[in-house]
Length: 212
Image (cartoon, rainbow, N blue to C red):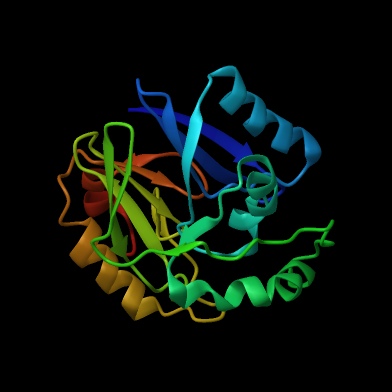
């Protein structure tokens, strides 16, 4: 599996495009905010002749959904996310105002398919296992590709840190418990791709993350 990483919007959010030799792909957390960011993502997909099969959301905080409407317009694909975060789409304007953004016409087409614990998302020859790890948000989920040895965790876990829990629906104890039980039980060499910042590994975080 190949992984293309984009860093988008003023909050430096990581957007991922996963694809393989079949040319099928998924987009995880399209945070593209500015027109040139949207063009960059679209051109990568078109230039590589990729077929978008899924638009996946680790969670629905504003900086991870900026591009949902754009992807829907281009490919007629709605985001897939956990139902417990759906309320965030209703208060998207309030989220933007809280963090000093104008809405720039930002809209979401709404969740097209709900993802739950142990669901499997397939594209090409790839399988992504869904794990529900609430705490950063009620509906935070991660996508684990066992064969590729990597996991896409949104804002659940970072290199040397964890996701903030002071936003609506956050819960520190739930987050720590979920990381211990569902992420730290993965093989230590599993590569962790977070929603912000550099990648890390499960073993590195077990050993050095100050929250544990």
